[in-house]
Image 1 (tube, rainbow, N blue to C red):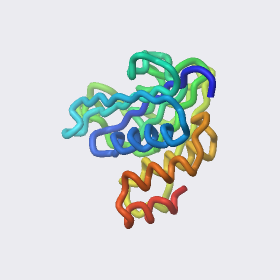
Image 2 (cartoon, rainbow, N blue to C red; image 1 turned 60 degrees about the vertical axis):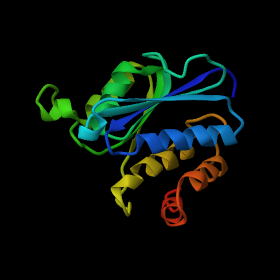
Image 3 (cartoon, rainbow, N blue to C red; image 1 turned 90 degrees about the vertical axis):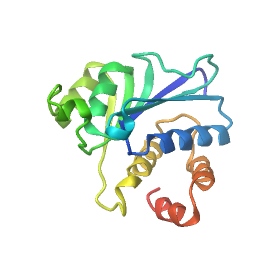
Image 4 (cartoon, rainbow, N blue to C red; image 1 turned 60 degrees about the horizontal axis):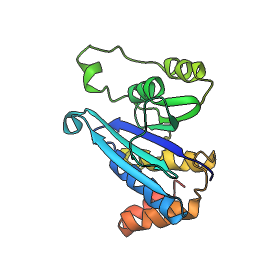
Length: 186
């Protein structure tokens, strides 16, 4: 990998963004990539937004600047739309899990429900690519983040990252039973 590669991850409290960020950071480390990471939390315990920043390559700050994410990962539909509008770089890629948990501002009526077409249009305006993930075969909804990682690997969305690196990172972070259940998704 040459240069800097910015990844912005977002979801709603309780979806596993922290695990996803740690998994990708460790996998990048196993791949020999320089990595900096940072988590930011809103009202996570009350269904609020949770975000993580991951930067691969030489940089001083772990925070991805607005509009400079080469890759945005979202674990919820509304957060996917926000990530596309605020963080995604021109020609960037958005991969998102299609579930609708209604973040706090949607539940309060401050922001309308979004549609799949809203997300696709936002990414198209940036000449980017969008990858919608939805799986009916998950044993547990908490496995959505690994379903995202599976598609991320399938489409080669993180330069230098392989399934081998991800499996090593998963082995570090999951007990044997959880690891076995999640490896089926890869």
